[in-house]
Length: 323
Image (tube, rainbow, N blue to C red; front, top):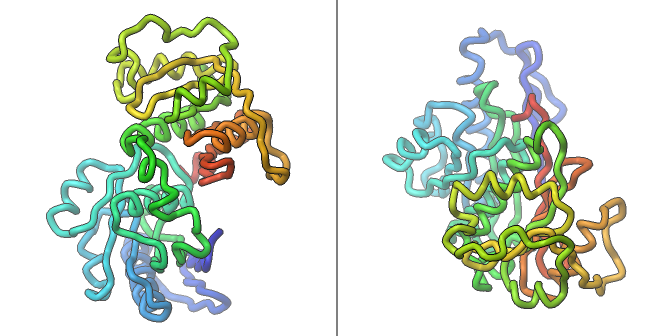
């Protein structure tokens, strides 16, 4: 799914790009700034070479936003951050700044979420090439560079397929559920891993292709008390996530039910090997409705998004070192 990937790593004060290594005597104190300069310079060079439209940067890696000004003025700069202070500071200088969920993500996960937000905001369209920089905040410098060709390697990343773009599903509802799912995948519940399904949108048809496994814990409550956008409801959702079955959520974020058995059969013969019944159920329900399904794998913590019976995106659970 990745078009091209360059890893430039710091090992015993050496820069290694492709198969060449150059010894450079630098202090540990100056290393982060130096490596960031190297990555920005390389990103600039690669962007020109491949004809990239944008450079997407995960800005939380380090604090000095002025370094980004060294990029070619003809290339659009897109900054992504989950830090409120960084977002406010970046907005004063840069035009395209995205706020991403405050959850732990892998390097690739950061890029996936950021690209999805960029598509949703209309900053990236099918046919664009973008250079992406990411890393780990604790290290203080970039260590990952990826070139993406939207519409080829990332066919799913088009405005037509993005959840909330073509259907009635509100983007803020989708992002809220996705953030909640990633939190559950990372944290689990009471020290135990959690596996569950969130089905968002097209709720009337979803209910037709499903049945209640348990008494619906949300039945009888006012809509205002069971909206996924309400921070007070998030802990309740986390408690019920240990129940068997799926959550069914309206386009506007109102939770219809929990503990729902999805009975829609998957019409496609081909399905990725090694994925359990939750994933088959999610693929099945999204193949016969316009709903979007978000699945947490109990065994791996990977979050998968399903649309039209296929996997739209995978977000892997980060290790503690990668957080």
